[in-house]
Length: 287
Image 1 (cartoon, helix red, strand yellow):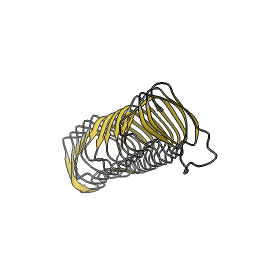
Image 2: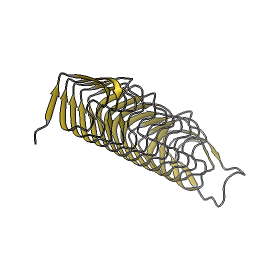
Image 3: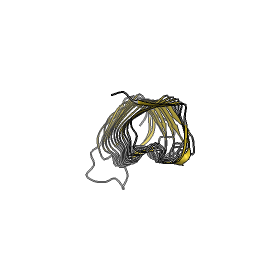
Image 4: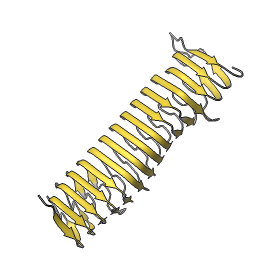
């Protein structure tokens, strides 16, 4: 069945294309209004501009390419399924809420406030998100490659996350998250992954105070720590190796940790939770 094509048109007001099905939009502008394509299915949009709110709500199946979501198009992608955003510019905040099946590629989000809450099955490739406090809150089944993020409290309560080749600038990232694997990335910010479960960091660089504390099941492979990454691993169950120097490790609960450079300070004090049997081996330099 061929798609109905709507080309070179402008719409405004409330619900101008409500309940559209099997439709392709080309060079269409949706002016300020609400719920322009709500409760639709099988939507394609290319070279379009969206200015109104709540554009694609309750929509099953959409592909949006080379389009622009203006700042006024806040909360445009909620409650929908199987959506693709490719080569777009997205200035709108509060995108992606309670969605399943999200694919985003080659797209920047300069205003990522409250993005990707309560979502499932998310894939991001070549994506940048800025101003994005509380990103990925309560979301699951996330795969990310080539990614840059600037915003705090990201990935809180997230589950089943795999990340490659990322720079994540975020205080309190991965707080109380579960089943997280990060490869070849840089993670900057205080209190990384506190109260997490099953956290795997492979060839990552970690900065920020008191990283990786209270983690149940932490695995480190060939990671490096910045000069400000102090008092690390407190009350964590951790195995693996750290390349280079570490400022300080404090009260790890259990596991086997190898530091391949210098360890400035190893602290086991009266606040250590018992029973505790962590083994820390320093291959080079002082301990």
